[in-house]
Amino acid sequence: MSSNHGNSQNLNDYSQWSKEQLIERLKHLEGKSTTTSSSSNVVSETQAVKLTQPMKKSKKKKEFDFSKYTTRHIALRFAYLGWSYQGLAIQNQETELPTVESEILKALFKIKLIGSLEPQACNFSRCGRTDKGVSAMNQVISLTLRSKLSADELISPENDQKELDYIRILNQVLPPDIRFHSVCLRPPKDFDARFSCTYRHYKYFFNGRGLNVEKMREAASYYLGENDFRNFCKVDGGKQITVFKRGVLRSEISQLEDDDRFYVFDLKGTAFLWHQVRCMVAVLLSVGQGLEEPTIVKRLLDPVEFPSRPAYNMAHDIPLTLYDCGFNEDEVKWSYGDGKENLHHLEFNGLWNDIQIKAITANFMKKSVFGPLKSNIDRVVVNLGDGRGSVSGKYIPLEKRPRLETPEQINAKWRNKKKRTIEEVE
Image: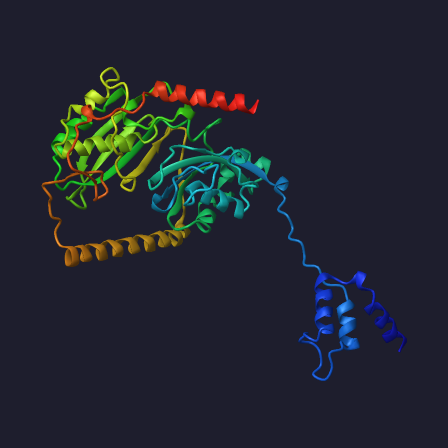
């Protein structure tokens, strides 16, 4: 009896009750509790004692202690289909679609290979930045990751076989359209994916229907060598770029072996400006349509005749792929995933199969419902590589179009705006 009496006294000591217990008590008093008896709205002593018992606290998740592990700076090579992403590079502001890097960093953080989502924290560097919709086959990043080897074991390359299987464990948590396939565990000292790269190799696929490919090949040949590409890029005042010369090592157009309706523009260079490749392709396509002469490329490469870019649309993003990134082969040795990796390649194979089926379905619909494409002599459709093009009443040659601001004007305008902002703040 005394024990029950003591518990009854505790019932009135609401200061010891949790929020959930207080709410339950109120429900009992108001006759709304599901735990009251059918004949009475009063809480039984047994229930009251249960309510006064302290709530069990959930176990706090133990934090991963990175200080117990060594780290190593490595290079990773991977492929991705860029159609579902807002480009490669992680953005400072929220984007409509995720970026490829944001997915990679989230995966690295999830499997405890890095301790922060901030790229700077793991010395993150990318080889070639790609735009929204653009894909890659051999993109390269360098970064510092957690290792399972001890400091002494890291000294000898013989111990690398005992290292974490970075490729396999990354692919386990990444979307199927992002696949890591190669790793270099011992890049040269001070290796940086961006600054150690010797060339970037792009491929742009296009349908050759209605195009004079021979004229396009002639135009493409004028890109070779070191030239000023100010009229083949988008100028960003925030970057304050003043030198627009870039070296092109290869500029060729060839027919695809698998499908003779399609061609590929093969472009290899030391470095490229923002949107440079898609601007180069746009001009080539206008030459292929007979809207411009092949020599327009040479003229646009002359900053005296064209000190600023004529207004024209870039080529479509989807057909562009970063095919390869070059490094010193004697210093950067790539190793590939083992047989277990085939399990993760099956995911990509499934994705490929879905895309093939979609293409077959769309082609069947195009033939059955819409029929052949009819030409309209009253309208000009400028080929942009997207199958739709830009429709206009009359084509205006590039030399007669309005010009954008010169790079010097864009840079000066950005500096003046920044100066005014600083003055306003002060």
